[in-house]
Length: 89
Image (cartoon, rainbow, N blue to C red; front, side, top):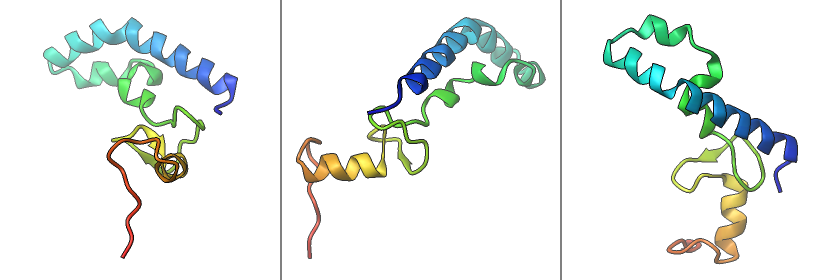
């Protein structure tokens, strides 16, 4: 399970993204990319997607399943992910 402090940090990042979402949309519509770079780093929604929800691991992240490769392998072998089977040849 992911550490509580990591989950809380992700919640804080989500609040920051929501806070600046309207401003980011306006700047993007005006093609003001310099203005976007002046916003806080955590204002970008892409910063939220790179952490496994189960283990909290950042590296080896599989976007399609939104989990790390280690968690994916464990869950796939246990049959917890629909449509995923272990290959054998």
